[in-house]
Image (tube, rainbow, N blue to C red; front, side):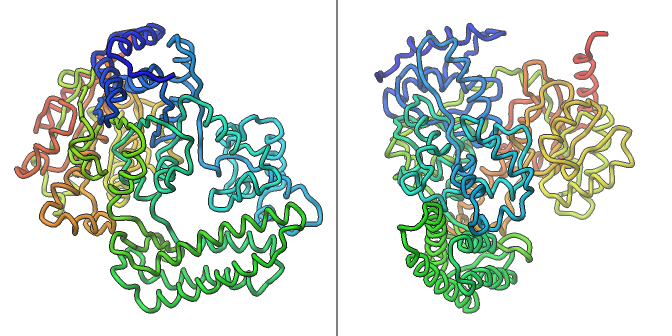
Length: 636
């Protein structure tokens, strides 16, 4: 039963829930956000909520959604937040909200083990399982098969150890190749279909933004029916939807298709055509790496794609010739190969038809180039696939001012609020801008920046997350400072991200040097992270193809509507790594002097940051660090 929750109902429900927290405290921002979400639900109006760290925004949107009784999809950009919702916040509300509801987690099909693949793997006298089983460890495959007999979800995340990519590929299927439950012998027992059924019956469904983007791009074919959508970490929505609404052509897709075809079609010449198409595509794309493809394709590339399309057409005809009344496993393999072929046919045709509303470019190493095609503007896609279908709440710690326009929200169908943060940024944090350093575009900047970084790390006793806008700058800093510093330095290249964060957190004296992947989604409260440094303002590259195309559309407004909002958002995300709890204290240091001197835009950037105290003097930053560490010194 649905209702339009009143502010009083929402506040009471939130108070009842938060009373069950170990450290229950009233958070004005959380209450305001929950009430505003409830009102937006009742008014069927989209809502943008900027909610700073510590607000408790998950409960602030979950409580009014559950009280309203509306079927809700919650989409988040990171696995960490998805796990928090599924394993912590929603179970907590089941126990403490006093209202019965069901929740489920839904992931992309390739996250679930495929019973049909396992059945084919264990069969006798068949062709190789797409060639993958031969390359995977028999012991690992046997272990995955044994696990599949005991798991109730089939979700890869349940595994105690991460499987190898080749082994998992042998026992799973992607959405592009799955023929669907009705055409699969194991359709009734399918883990992915079971997850979809649970999601269809749940009141709250947790997904990632990529899956939401696929639902938007497919006219609602991916997710169960719903009335309310909550998008957490919404600052990433535009980029993720642009990615899911586009496509990629690479040699890997053709190799995958060849393996699938080889398992069902005894025609070496046709399979060879697909394999050589992979080689042809790589050879033709190689000279264009890091280039945007404008207008009509160059003849060599157009001819290669035309030849590849004709080979795919012949393959499709050969697959149609396989009878559908043969063994069930063969019919299923045929369906998978047909699905893969159809998707590739459509994407090759789209690549050949240069469209004015998309941008095409080639990226990756020259040995393995990829042709990427994405829509320039996702506003219309989101209007049709999301804004016109369901009430939507978008929230993040940082929401760019121009975000609504970029994603197609008009002034008449949404409201925007900022509920702040409960943290005392002015007292607990200091923003230091090294205004005396050279301009980052000068050759003298890098050594001067490294000297500044070394001095601050020594003052902090390690405890530093040093963020860089490029791998080159990070590598140079690691090489220069490791021999100079008295405390350990970890590089992003040293180990996988989870292990890096765990090692960094465990040793207070360690500093971690990292690039853009660490500017958001890293949560390290306490003394371990007392200093965040940023080498330069993270303006996007001028030659980034998708943004380049958007700049051309924006013309004179490009810097203010494209580049500046992205730089401000990323700068705020990086600075936001510092204060993660009410007791945290420390310094954010920006070595780019333009933050202090660029009159045209510096206040746009500073205004996007938490309201730290500010200084241009390194001595003040060093003194603040020493004082903060002294206050935080644990009792002996």
